[in-house]
Image 1 (spheres, helix red, strand yellow):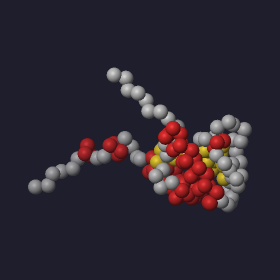
Image 2 (cartoon, one colour; image 1 turned 45 degrees about the vertical axis):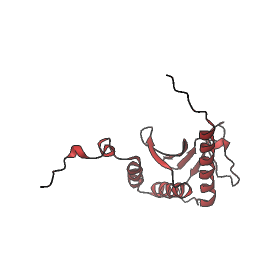
Image 3 (tube, helix red, strand yellow; image 1 turned 135 degrees about the vertical axis):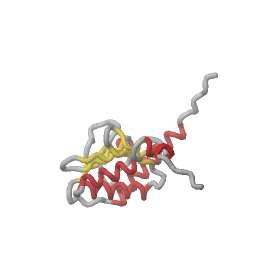
Image 4 (cartoon, helix red, strand yellow; image 1 turned 180 degrees about the vertical axis):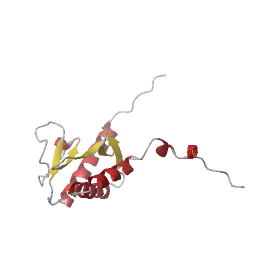
Length: 148
């Protein structure tokens, strides 16, 4: 005799709503124009550059890519897809991809406009540099002592 499967037996992810990856898929589909295509392509490049990247959905609808900390966010506006690198000011940018938020001491961003060509090699290099920075900081943090 087969046991009936009930809705209560579904995974915790489903119980808490769609996964961040599904929410990002939804955003791309919802946009339905060049912004969705651009975000989709950038997302693919992030995953190529760092196969261990973790996708998150934060701040009421912002795709976030993490690896030992935030790498970058992908915000979509009417005229631009903005990729904001959380620690961008600390990254070398030899090809000059950063073109927005240049005045800050921490973040840097790349604004992609409709029809803009993506320098895939340079973008993936920035992703790898951001991951390397995050992982070096994670390794250098001293372990917290547990209170007894």
